Length: 219
Image (cartoon, rainbow, N blue to C red; front, side):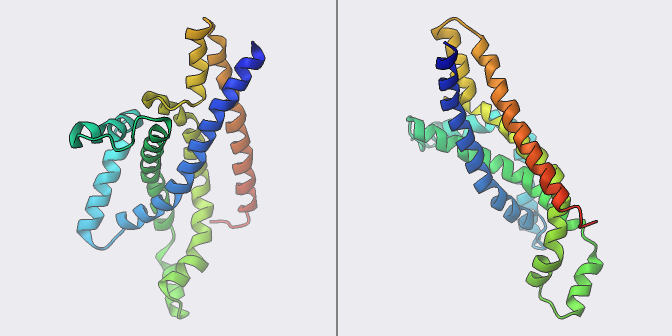
């Protein structure tokens, strides 16, 4: 039984890992673009972006999953995602990507705005363009400053992937919970915690190493 449960949980963890990695692929760059929008000098764009970020950060991710998956069918009269496993996964990915992009955008914004204006002015004096100043002066300092809060959000994402089961994405918690009905045992559900702890621990070690490599850059 232990072997059967482990194989089932590994399959569920594969889905969890896929959702986690793809969310980062889309949310990290999207968050940077959103942060630029929230710092825009064009006031209507700035207010619109900040309002969207406020709504996304102020409402539960579970609610956003439900709205994104079921909303098109309710309001548009057609199921945008389809009812198969792939459609549910894509809906979950869209919800996670938008949600975490908004959180990441605030981290990016805080990091960028923490750089003293004098460094930008020094770059202009040297004849550098805005792009050169950002890439060669600002970027490394921003990365150094955002690694701790970013690592915290990414580790939180590992655990938040369990919410995808609300729209029947068969991640690890779903697989562990299924044994309660099929076999009348609950320990596989608790066993899923081992997978989360191991993966979160691995990420913690990874981010600690990154922080040490960037420690030479004192801000």
